Image (cartoon, rainbow, N blue to C red; front, side, top):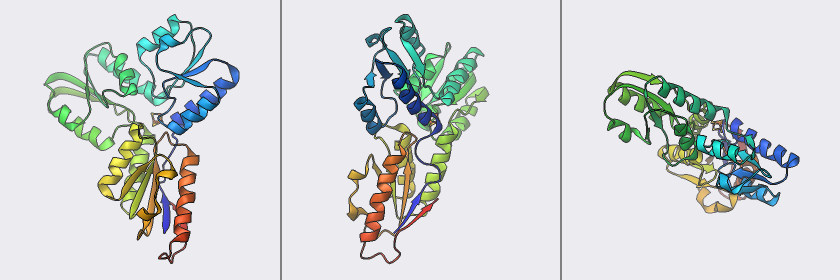
Length: 293
Ligand code: F3S
């Protein structure tokens, strides 16, 4: 069985940065919390907990004795204000790409456009983006919701950084028919687009796809959905323990991808597992063969 790994998979720049900021902060301060899980990956969050780094869900729970790390997908304007009023030491790990989405949405709203945010309504990043908009906005989670928007003079379209590029373009086409002026600011980050594009390429040429990452991770779930559409035999797992050898029976090519919040060691563990499957397969005459896609 040949093992292929998507060209772009696993930790993105923003997550890598957030994780290192938490590590560095815990060396400098005591009473360190992350505001919500630092990333959507339960295994990393548990590791931090073992090292005494807590998770708090409400800025009212912390005070001047604490240091709080703001996670990569950002927090609302109101949360920053609460932290400031409580004199909490804040280390801001908001990804610069999320900051860019927040700033673009605010600026376009101030310029008079009705801001359309393409994203998941309840996702913390989307909540953070809209909190910075001082004017009218609407959140659309898919093409269907965009198609029922009313006509306006001017719409401005931005996106949650981890959304699907293809759907973003479709929503832009729909909005063009609904206003005199449409400003498009594609705030989907490059890491997401690259992960999606390389997952698509890989899913087309394998018999089975394994997508690794937290079930609470939006970008991992989207990678899974994208791959599943192309390769029906696609599996979303968090760790190698969820894999059963039998699902690889008769498969000659396996593809692996991982969400932007999936640490490298979890990917390595899956690769090791697949190498064992490959070696132990009595039907496989090819031996184990791992390639980067
Ligand atoms: Fe940032 Fe993109 Fe990662 S927005 S956190 S680099 S998925």
